[in-house]
Image (cartoon, rainbow, N blue to C red; front, top):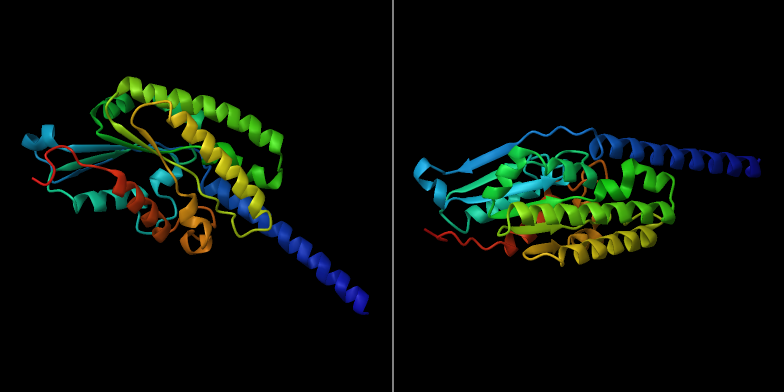
Length: 265
């Protein structure tokens, strides 16, 4: 009787684990890798026609992290960056969020060929960008069909695209400061945390090496912000940041931005 009970419990545990992984995969696909829509969200804070030449212009590119998926306030890290900057200056600040939910690096390469996107980039003083999470986690398949060879192949393609992205941005706008925001590990509390953390750290390192080839492109780490208490800063999908997670990213990015256009007027 005891043996039978143990077998039943074991089977139920396996089924529950399988259902959890399946549910996680579906959630990730829906929330992070969903087919892309590209609304341009532009904000002009206190700007008048006379202020146009003196405004500080910020453009955001990338995926659902830059769109702010998971933040119930709707701000995302871009919104918190704006909040921090408004506390530093009275000059008008404008922002266009061009990020697309579900975007991979190949999609951003194509997006940067669009005339309107280039027009926005030409005006930018600062460019914020997240990209690569979709390339790495591949709609949840990286977890469900784990393969180092597959990840390495994806990274080769991604790094080529990232180099093209940075090269294009520098061609369109040689002066703007670009903040490329690195990945964190949302699976830091799971059984294979050491493996996934090592993969994310190497992914970030290789991305930062590409960024270092170009002037005024800064790789901003986020891995450490989530490492110790990851679940405190994740949305209910256990993948995207929640309000507090985005706020931590936003505060770090904002601390690196210097307002140079008549600061404090």
